Image 1 (cartoon, one colour):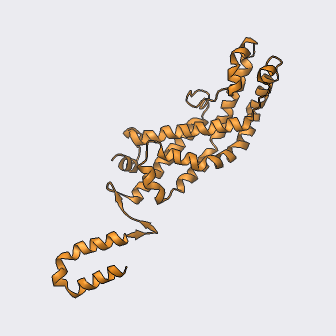
Image 2 (image 1 turned 90 degrees about the vertical axis):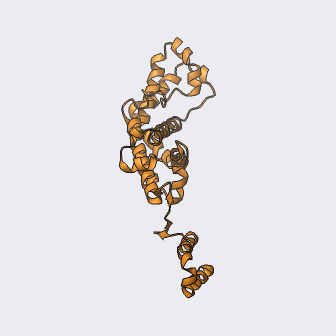
Image 3 (image 1 turned 180 degrees about the horizontal axis):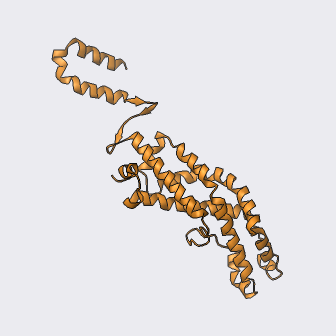
Length: 247
């Protein structure tokens, strides 16, 4: 700051000598101080202001979150999507052939279907948590996420919101599991006399398993939506999206 005051003093005392230097001096001062607005540095990146980038990134993520939640929570959103379909837990997959040989194929299928239905019903609860995370994006987050890879923002949200989403999801998954019959289907399968020896020593926390698979499916869909907006002009449905991601 002292150097800046000295510079202005010299320019004021000798305008005829430094007149040609005035414009470049002002530019130097701007570079040192950096124009400020509402506590943030206002600048331009590739012809875009910080505010435009923040607005565009938020809009892209809000759109991606909405689309991902709609897809996941739709009927068949998990069950009919091979990318996020929730399979039988590992130890039951290992003996799936044996289960069918014992005539337990329908019980295994019912268990798998109810898990996917529970995930679909719970997915709608993700919207307010993810929307708040988008709203909380700061200017410090913006440049890194905007210039990151095709799924940079999704990766950020996976890290930031997984725990609060998991806490919110778990009781919902438990309730929906009861409603659609996950626990009943599971018990009817593993309590069968022919199955018990095959899975001896194993233990499954159903709520934990379905919650984890549901969240992973949601973030997988969000990553797909983010990548579309970044790479496919057709997915940029507003002017700000076209401007921010069309460079």
